[in-house]
Amino acid sequence: VRNPNQDSESSRVRGRSKNKRPIYVEKRSRKKRKVVRALEVEPIQMTPPEWLFNVMRREENGYDPKLISTRKLFQTDINKDQARLSVPFRQVKTPDFLTEQETIFIHEYAMKTRVEGVSVDLVDPNMKKHALDLRKWKMNGNWIYTFCKGWNNVLDANRSFKVDDVYPLWSFRSGKGKLCFALVPSQATSSSHVGCSTSRESGRGNTLTGGDGASTSGESGHVPLLVNPPSHPAKDSTHSIQGCSGGSSSNSS
Image (cartoon, rainbow, N blue to C red; front, side, top):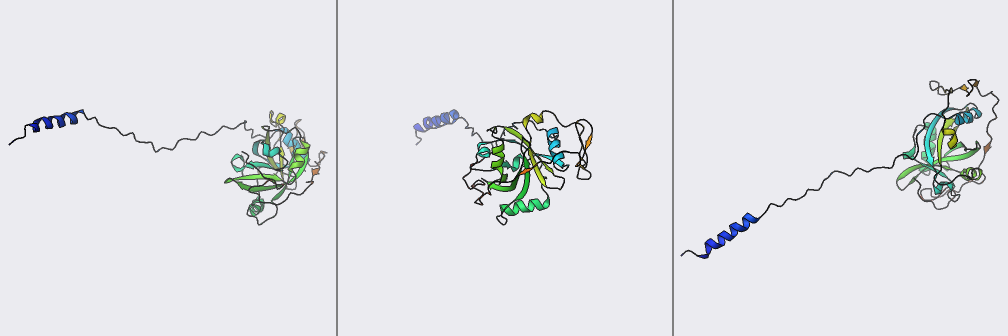
C-alpha cells in the first residue's frame, strides 16, 4: 500500500533543496603584512663637511673619514645617570670603520672577557676633544655601540644638547692611526667640503687642501686639539640593563 503522504513529503524535500544556496567560505590570506618603517628623520650627507676636515688637520693630518650615523639625541643620551651615547647597529651607515683588532676588543668586552672596549677620541661640536671608551651592548635583542667613560664630560661641555637634536657622527683616523669620532654641528652640514681630497688608494691622505686651495699638512701650523680625559672612571656593571655609570637605563632608538 502506497503512503499517500510520501509524494507530499518528497516534494517538500525537493523544495527545501532548491532553496539551499551555496555557502562561500572566505579564505584568509596567508600573505604577511608589509611593515612600513619610518623614514630617515634627516637627509644623509655622505660628503665630509669642511668643519670635519679642519678637525682632521689638527689631528696630525687625519684621514679616512666615514659617516657612522646621523644621530638624533634621546633622553638617555643626555641623562648623566646613563653616562653614555648609544648608536644602534641598524643606524650605522658605514659599518667597516673598525680594524680587525678593534673588532676583537669590542667583542671580547661584550662577552665579558675584557674589562674595557676600545679607547677613542671624540671631538664635540665645539671642537673640544674627549677621551671615551667604545663598546657594544645587546639590549632587547638588538646590538648597539656605546660611547662611555667620558661622555658626561661631553655633556658638561655642550649644555645646549637637547632631546631631538640631530648631529652627524663621523669617524676618522688620526695621523697615528688612532680611531677618532666627531659630532658635527648642524650649521656645518649645510655646505660640503670643496677642493679637499683624501687618498683612498694609499689608505691615508698625507695632504689636505684647504678651502682656499692651499695644501696643508701636519706641519701646517694648526694647533692640535687637547684631549679632555674622563674625570671619573665608569663602574663596570651588567651592561645589558645598566648605563655606563651603573644606573638603570631605558631603550633608545
